[in-house]
Length: 432
Image (cartoon, rainbow, N blue to C red; front, side, top):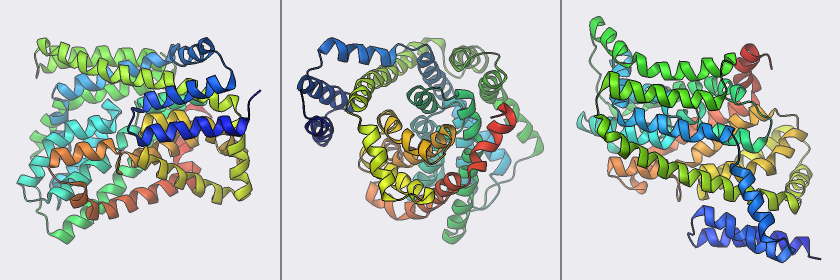
């Protein structure tokens, strides 16, 4: 026999100690699970089976296909085409390049589904361009990294697919539909605060473009934007599953990039493939390790204990939602997004179920919470990418980020406490 309190302390304690020692998160999850399993007398084959079950899923194939599609489009000049289209639409206002940046992130988010990919692709173009036009480097980076979080909310988001797998029986179609309005709301809110800061700092007006240039910009990016339509319409109508949609998106991206746009030669495809495979390997290993960790959590009844602990804090639904948001924001500062989805979902799902929150609604709230975590030190990957492109330190960026963080937090509170923002589209389209 074993002492469950000792086993719980060993599981969570060893995990956090290894993480503080900067051991890769996949190994933190695996090692802490194995140590606790040995203490509890669980054989290694059982733990291995739990790990394999985590990656033995047809639905999981959607993630590598979406990653490959995003890499192809990002490398194939799609970012510049999105920038041209956004500039034609809104580049003429004061601080116009900031508005272009945000709108380009909206467009590219519907293709890549990744905050880091968005920042890498759009940021490498727009941050130097904004600095050259007289915008502050801190402002340019802040606009780029905050707007990139739209990619996590607007479909196709592979993080939402990870959540649907962990949460169980949560429709990917419903999650895709639920993320559209919050993603657009976030983009619109960032446009407002960007404009206010631009006016305060006296940033220049952009140049108007002719109608012919607008038409040309749309034509140049229309085929790329069609990726979003192919994925969303196909999944929502039930023509194909999310996994099949991802495969179609990858094939479509390949054809458009190398045989229609031809901004990069076909000989460059192995480089894109290697980069995609590296990302996919990391994600799959992480899912497998987190699954055995989640199995240990369930074995020790930690989700049930966490539910009981949170419910003893208050029986007020609004207070509990605030506590959950604050908890996720804090965790987002110290852990990356994918492992947090895999770890926190099985723990918090019983809590939100008790207070009557839809798992689809919670999934979108979770995405925005953890997306904000990508922008906070010490492990914010999007933050580091933006600072590297802008060649500024986190300390230099911190002051300008305050109003942007505030706006993102207000959007988070809105989608948390006003379910209609999240649930109206899936209810209308899917009849939920």
